[in-house]
Amino acid sequence: MDALEAKTKPNPTLNTSTSSLKTQICLKFLAIVSSLSALCIIFTSKQTIMLYGLQIDAKYSDDSSFKFLAAANVIVCVFSVVSLVVAVVLARECSDSNIYFYMFLHDLVVMLVMISGCAAASAIGKVSQYGNTHTGWLPICDHFARFCHRSTVAVILSYFSFLVYLLLTIFSANNLKNFIPV
Image 1 (cartoon, rainbow, N blue to C red):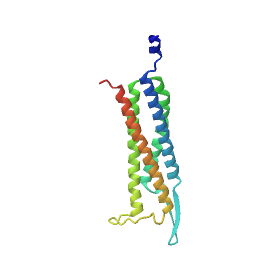
Image 2: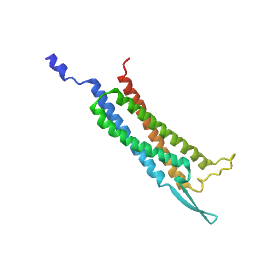
Image 3: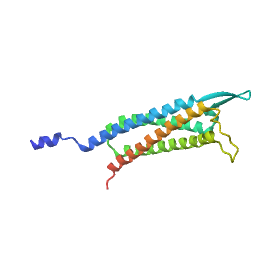
């Protein structure tokens, strides 16, 4: 009877791997949603005002930092979808440590792309909000409040996507640690 019970006991490694896979799938889905939301907001951020009889537009494509943030969000969104498919399909079929290593590298690179886009947009956002008296740059958010608000929301969503990928990187490193012989 004991031999039969030993055969039917669940494998703890399999349960850990399954729960890890489910957590990674949820986090990758969360990263897709946040980066896609940031993309939608940044692409639709546009405001036109009349100042001294001149029509002035503010849109994300006017600044290279916001273009870089949009490109970073596109990269994160596309690579998150690809890695989600890989996580669902390949991780179920084999438990090779190479998959966890490549997932770790993927999560690390995507996290770095996202934080660089966030940092660039945050820097230009600060200048847009407060100006820079040393260089003579005036703040524009007092005139383009709606544009600045939408850009701020897009940057916050991008930072959230970064934090999700930070968690994914930690998770992937922990999964990889379980496969490395000591």
